[in-house]
Image (cartoon, rainbow, N blue to C red; front, side, top):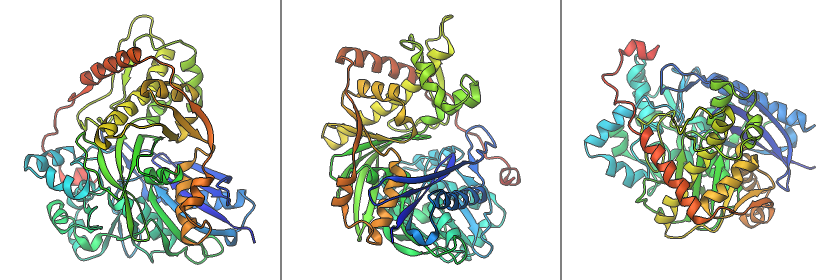
Amino acid sequence: MTQYILALDQGTTSSRAIVFDREGNIRSVAQKEFEQIFPRPGWVEHDALEIWSTQSGVAQEAITRAGLRAADIAAIGITNQRETVVVWDRQTGQPIHHAIVWQDRRTAAFCDGLRAQGLEATFQEKTGLLLDAYFSGTKVRWILDHVPGARERAERGELAFGTVDSWLVYQLTGGQLHVTDATNASRTLLYNIHTGDWDEELLRLLEVPRPMLPQVRSSSEVYGETAQGLFGSRIPIAGIAGDQQAATFGQACLERGMAKNTYGTGCFMLMNTNGEAVPSRNKLLTTVAWQLQGQRTYALEGSVFVAGAVVQWLRDGLGIIRSSGEVEALATSVDSSEGVILVPAFVGLGAPYWDSYARGTLVGITRGTTSAHIARAALEAIAYQSAELLGAMGQDSEAPLQELRVDGGASNNDLLMQFQADILGVPVVRPRVTETTALGAAYLAGLAVGYWQGTEEITRLWGVDRVFEPQMDAAEREHRLRRWRRAVERSRAWEEAEGPEPAQAEAAR
């Protein structure tokens, strides 16, 4: 009987499910967007129950669209928006607060306080991360401090904390499993990437009770099965990885020095450093790429907080396009941005700046500036931010990149990919299957159940759609990067550090 792999791709703005065949080809796709909640400037939340309902709904829809039954699915792989925090009641399965999203900046002042105590080196040495509101640990601390009675209940073991993968597995198994994998654990500020376990000192510093934490497992193993009656037949859940690590695996960046960039809501570049957790001198992150058969592979990562989200802003905020797909045509209608530069620091700046107080900036506007120039500047901003990541990565790894593999929704934008190659000065390679985040999760699940036999087979399945060769000369490239950096400086430290926290009841509301 022919079988398939189902990948659940739970993203920041939508839940998707994709059915893959043995060749890594897509058999069907289902997707549903869900609400973005912005209670205050810099705060971003999701309804965790809506995440579950949309994800379970598209899973069933993808199976049906492929003309399959649950019995035809060999395994489920899960990939997810990382760092987003859910805290729920173990008995009822109900969240005690909205999920706090990775983009959320509400704990920036708390991170400043930890840094002022001289604790950043401790966190960086153990976790490979910087002390920033981006990561999960300070978000769960905030929930425990602001939801009445939450801390006491957590210490009694009544509450569960998890990133979105843990939340989905808990729901998929009818509350039977509370697990995560090493990639998601490595994004929490609570997990020691060298020992492979939750770290007691970090738990104490962030005041997160150990009983609420999930068990950390490998990225590819059979964790359990879906609950009876959920899909008709019980399906093994056999792969978990955070979205960027899954994309790196799906891009077959399986050797040291290989790198990919994913263009999603944010932009994320990862370089495989194999078994070495390379410390960064340039404010990059050292993270777990995946854990297979007990062996951890590491990566250097650079994060851009706003990439595809800038196109959503053009659509929803400014109303200059009706759909995200229109942005390329609008941007191509002019030959250049005519000196307009957009720094989309809507929720601060990620690597290599890590400035929580930066805000979006549009410079170089003249009377002749049109919506087309702003659209082009928005696309170019995605490429500029990625170029800064690659420069830092080359310095840390001491190995210049030979090519950049790309994926994610915006990688289908030819104008953006050509400008990315131009501003990087290296070829940009787009694979035949650009849904590499879901594909990586599928590969991890398939390996665990013997659907694919090994990583060599995965390397053979990877295929090229198009290579974008750089066409910009070095002098022009450096001139443009200098202007970009000037614009970035004008966006930095715009907001002042927050004052005293609002009243507990108001914040909980």
